[in-house]
Image 1 (tube, helix red, strand yellow):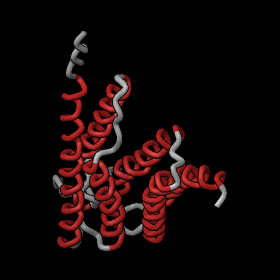
Image 2: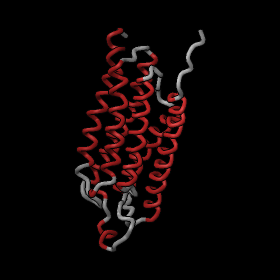
Image 3: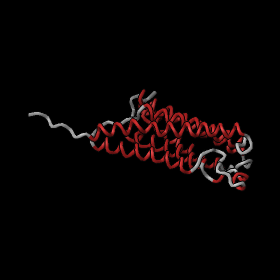
Image 4: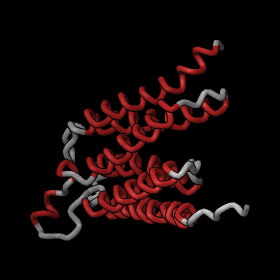
Length: 216
């Protein structure tokens, strides 16, 4: 492989993920619970999985070929957040509301088991980590991804397609096992997402410690 190909290919995968995210949102936007355009909901699942696969390869190839770039450092997490956070916003939206649950005045009205407050928690975690990274880098401290953050991303990438699959194909409003399946994925993801932010908060304590002046 040429050096030019090695430099460009990981970044091309990153940009491809952004386009796949757009296609994912477009496909998911045609679905409405319980049975409007279920086929397109399943197409959206395939697009999300394909986008998640590009996430697994772009960074790995950049490190393997030693072609990390500022473009990749900026765009890789940006594309990840567009895909995953955008997915959670959609799954907490009106297209996944269970009409009969709303009519009955039930507390549980979302076929996905995802509610706006959960999206706020996930967003808050991402904003906090981004802020901590900004402080660290302003002090000249290397601030790469931690293993807890990678575990969070992997779980979110599994939970999103699983929840869409259950909500679109097995009607959680009618089947208890499907409803509990969605809740399992969602609450596990929520707990791991919050937990994954703790190591970053602890690292901030070390970053903020005043530097000891060198002895003359």
